[in-house]
Each structure stands twice: as C-alpha cells, then as structure tokens.
Length: 348
Ligand code: NAD
Ligand code: MG
Image 1 (tube, protein in one colour):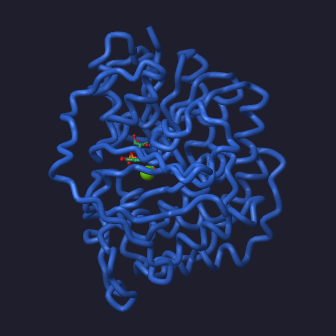
Image 2 (image 1 turned 90 degrees about the vertical axis):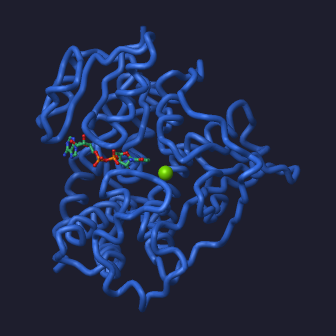
C-alpha cells in the first residue's frame, strides 16, 4: 500500500489525482488539503482546508506527497518532502522555480526523490531514464503555444480573461491557463527542467507542437532524438508519478497514429516576451527566478481581476526583474522576503 498525501485536492490536478487513486487498490489517500474550498466529498484519513500543510503532513506521514497546490504557496510542501526523503510527485512547478537552489539542498540532505507531474517533465524523465548525462545533447520542451499562437502584439492589446482561459488542448486551473497564453508557463517549465535534470539553459530548447501530442524530446549526441507521445491528458503523468516504477494501467484509449499529423514551429518570443524573460532570469540565477515567478503570479491575478491588460503582464515582470538585485537567498525566510517584495510592485 502506498499512502498518498494530496495537496490541492480540489483543483484540476487534484481531482484527476483522486480518480487515479480510486482506480488503484495499491494507492490510499492518507491526507487531502485545499486552500479554501471544502473537502466534504473527499475520502481521506486526514483533511485540512487552509492552514499550515506541514501539520497535516506530520500527522499523516505519507509515502508520497502529490503537491498540486498552485503558486509559491506550494513551497512548504516541496521542502517538507525533500528534507525528509519522502517521494515528491511535483505538479507545483512554481516552488521549484522560486526555490530551486534551496530545494536541491534539501534534497541532498534528505534524499527525497522528485517525480515530475508536469507533462513535459514527466516525458523528459521517461526519455532520460537510465542514460548517462554525457550522452544527452539537449532537452526539447514542447508547448501548444496557447490560444493566441500566431497573433501579433496589436491583436493582443484588448484580449479578455475569458479569451485567455480558452486553452486549445488542455483543461487546467486559471493561473496555469493564463501562463500558457503568455508563454510564461513554458518559461517556468524551462527553469523547472534546469533544476530537475541539471542541464544548463543553453542546452534546453523550446518548440511549439500545437496539438500537444508530443510531450517533449531528448536529443542525444549520436543524432538520435527520443520523443514521448500521448493524449493531452494529465491522468497519465499523475499515474506515472504515483505508481512509479510500476507504470500502472490507465483508462485512456491508445493514440490513433494514422490520424495524427505532427507539426512543429518556433515560439514567437517577441510577441510573447515572458519566455525570453524566464530564460534570462534562469541564466542570471540567484533569486531572479523567484522574482520572475512572484511578479508573474501577481500580474496574472490582476489580469484575471480585470485590473491589468494582457500585454502588461510581461511588462510587470520585466519591471520587477529590473528592480531586483537577484542576490541568492540563504534560507526560506530570505526567499519569502524576496517573493513578497516582488509582489509588492504596483500592477495597476
Ligand atoms: P487549480 O487552481 O485548479 O487548483 C489549485 C489547488 O491548490 C486547489 O485545490 C486550491 O484549493 C489549492 N490552493 C490554492 N491556493 C492555495 C494556498 N495558498 N495554499 C494551499 N492550497 C492552495 O490549479 P491546477 O491547474 O490544478 O494546478 C496546480 C499546480 O499544478 C500548478 O502549480 C500548475 O502549474 C501545475 N500543473 C497543472 C497542470 C494542469 O493540467 N492543471 C498541468 C501541469 C502542471
Ligand atoms: Mg506542462
């Protein structure tokens, strides 16, 4: 029996994770949390709405933590699991982006294993499994390009939250859906990949694949490239992480290969500057990725509230990065201060 603590149980990932746990007798929900939504219909030994997640994790003593909280708020759960050597199924990319160095240090001390849930990183993990690092040339992250792929900046000046929330291939929570429309999500994923796989930014590429069937690729030094294909359905990477290394069955139909046409294109980083800003923040290191993430979270919230135009999201993030000194954080308190300061920048 594997005892799963599901954090963010009421969200898009959380709901799909419950489906996976219920379908597998060897998985048991020992704890479930949400930020504010009631958990009355969730069957878990311990439940908690709001409050300190470390408390419920200490009580539940899970074998694996699925961190499906959205945003920087997921940081405590990420560090808790890594510090204690508990497996971490990580959907909450923001914690690894903001606290990459601290998370890796906690992992070195505690020996916790990260099983990525983000579909691209699950794909890369599978393509890389069992290979020596020197064989790997580059990681290639794929992205759909979001609902505004192909548009010009002029065509984006008046787009509304409803238009940004109409994602062409994935059904997800509102924050990541807006991030997909701005390409900030691919920027966060670039930094996430750097910390997960220890590959320098110069050897991580991004390419668009609009139907989200190719979840990512690894290029090897002999010229071969391995790709991971599948339906755009998060139940697969969730199941992979929760049942690792068994790779349990899921209810998904096989891909109909004869009906597929795979098209790739380069991302338009001028129209969608957040991807390039993330790369720059990652390369500069220190707390620049934390600042990128915090300013983006604040700007996305303001956009969803109707307080900030779509194109201003990138401007707010660029401004926050320009004001920051990027000095590395020695501990979580210092990092939380950097996060707070980057959010404090007025967005309206
Ligand atoms: P969501 O908004 O649907 O759900 C978020 C969950 O987090 C909810 O249960 C909510 O109650 C909880 N929560 C929110 N604020 C909280 C706080 N301050 N403290 C504790 N809990 C809080 O989000 P989602 O789409 O399920 O995404 C969750 C995470 O997974 C994000 O980091 C996202 O980037 C990542 N992710 C999601 C998908 C997807 O398909 N939805 C794919 C890849 C990665
Ligand atoms: Mg992803």
